[in-house]
Length: 506
Image 1 (cartoon, rainbow, N blue to C red):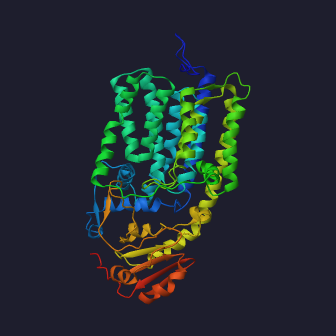
Image 2 (cartoon, one colour):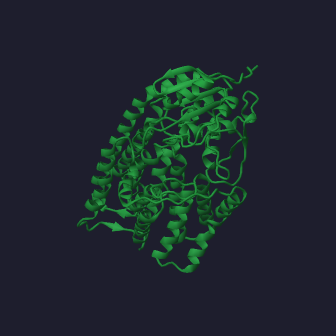
């Protein structure tokens, strides 16, 4: 389908915009600034950003940035293993920010960037393929502030954004091929790999399907595949040097697949999630119904439909990827909305989407504030444990419904603030750059139940403190090797009988 011309053109001999056009542009720019500030405001309005996995990511970057700092003892228990691995982009971003700001401020700066980059890159992609860029950007903002972002899967969001950037640049390359554009696409594709493997794979899959649906010559497809070769070789190297352990493939039933559709915008309110899903479907129906100005980029819309079909047959768990099928949905939804153009109706749809974004941002604000008392209680637990202590977190989740409200990674702030050692910092060989030196760490942390018997003698001999959340059933066993030093809410802190005596810093 031929590309549509931009709605604003400049005629010969009249390069200056009229006063009304200039005023309209200023108003749009002001509206975009207000929306951007609203989108990142939940991050800055609270002391602790209650994203589930986020504290662990921040602690990992903090350790890497201070690994050889004599003021810390991180090098006793951790090591760096830098390589061409996926997921290192977040570490590098956080480490760079930590050089400029205190760690927790640096984390908020990077979170703000990740919240904004997805709408910006989706709007860019939509503009390049003839869609409604601003409308797409607002819907991308709705996805950005919810779903997997609240779980702290920020690397995936970053990778999706870079994938959409790559798709937009690739669309330009197809229209106007030259070496500079090819290198730009190569850089974006490679960056998506270093952010998260999923964005890289989806970018490659989308480009392949777009070539097939648009009936591009085989030469176009082969040249496009070459863009993925450098990062693909990096992945092969990472797997050869750090092979994955074999894991079972698990599948979901049909009812779980249907309920999983809400994971696109999963948040704190299930009714609001379903309202958002139905609103997204209504946008397509209302925008297209008997609308002579409705336009659709057929190849890209077909790619979105193909990915949606893939969702229904894709496994729940594959290799080390949990929720593998549901993670396809945010990208698929944004790809579809990017390919649509509604003409004059866009202004009304924009108002509805903006109001929905405002409601979701407000809901996030409210819930972030409600979670602060428990976060502050956990911060008090950090003060009950001395600097440089060896701390074993023991955590069982309550249930899936409370997953977003279970701050089971909060102990990571102790790693940052007081130099603790803890064995559950994300350490995946060939994926993350941090390595943890061999230590006993019971399996089951962060799951719904410990299925293996914990070796309490090992715990007593290797750790000075136990940070126990939602495991009062284990209190008799813990009490045999430790003394309670802090109790508040569902959180207990025990000092072991053979506690390490950390050396004081000079």
